[in-house]
Amino acid sequence: MGNLIRGNVSRRTLLKTAGGVSALAAFGATPLRYALGAEPLKVGLMLPYSGTYAKLGENITWAVELFVEEKGGMLGGRPIEFIKLDDESDPAKAPENTNRLVSRDEVDVIIGTVHSGVEMGMVKVVKDSGTLLIGPNAGAGAMTGALCAPNIFRTSFSNWQPSYGMGKALADRGIKKVAYITWDYGAGKESMQGFADGLATGGGEIVQALMVPFPETSWQPLLAQIPGLGVEAVGTFFAGGGAIQFVKDYAAAGLRDKFPLYGSGFLTDGVLAAQGDAGEGLETALHYADGLNTPRDNAFREAFQKKAGRDADVYAVQGYDAAQLLAIGLEAVGGDMEKSDAMYAAMGSATIDSPRGAFTLSKAHNPVQDIYLRKAVNGLNMLNGIAVEKLADPATGCSMT
Ligand code: BEZ
Image (tube, rainbow, N blue to C red; front, top):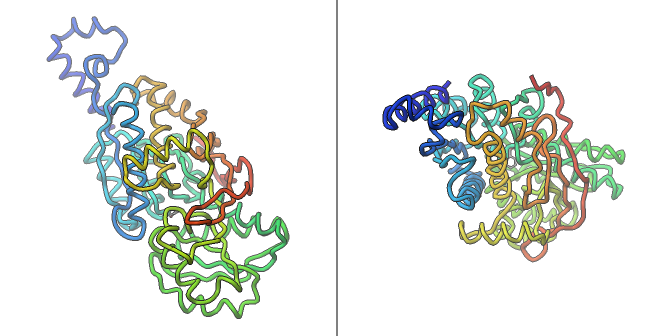
């Protein structure tokens, strides 16, 4: 509704300033607000700018801005205006924060967020309001599963995907018994499920789940249990500041050599330098890696470094691709978001020329993508093979109506 109201106001204003009906006739079928100087498109960036996921939110933001700058500040003929909101990775505040962007700020689209629990709150609001939502990280399965919707897209992953890849790689190596340690929230639990499903392809299993509340780092008592569990390896999901601390604590506890640690690549992506020696040699699986060495990725990494003054990581890639997906939709409708059916059809059938490698979206609007194996070598998450090619999330419960 916000879009319609703004559209009408703009149209009225333009009619007045452009000399009324004669101006309307002169521009024929072209919506006046685009013909006479386009109305800015309001993009809400709802991301964590504080707490353990702050750097993730920052990198997504830099990358979205980078893409828009590369396009001269306009997408689909509309100048882009950003409205940023720190969601603090706090699920309890998610509905109110999303409503603020939708109702008070009247954004046209929201790009967000990082934390799966916050994403769930956002999904519920945009399903009601009809606002376009593009997820640049959070892997909550329901977003492109039971709660999928025509106006909800994701350019990142489902929590299941990279962890399935890691579990399957271990299954291929004959690993049978694993413990899994993670934060006790949606992303941790869904990652553990993906890991278990991957392991199960070779008859392996998770024999013990060890969980700490998000975003706590009080895992020492859990680490102490590992030697007594009779496992060959340990699987994990941690990310951001928590992942830095966890990898250091795991090594300091003397567990690295006895119980090799494997995880979805969030464990080391963007944080490997801060993990220092404790991170070296870690093997992870993710839809991005260092050393892809494609012209597309090299150009992106150079541009991101120039803009942000820091190295690109998976979060930057996902943010860049969120902006690319938005551009594809807007270009298909000449910037007119009232043509949402045509816009979403173009987005849904797009091939996104991502730095990670080109990918398409499933019917549920989640990336179908290669899951790379990586090994941490000299501070880089170096490409070390492909765990699964063109992996789609099962999208359980999605019916796109
Ligand atoms: C999540 O909550 O979905 C998530 C957060 C950080 C990295 C990956 C996933």
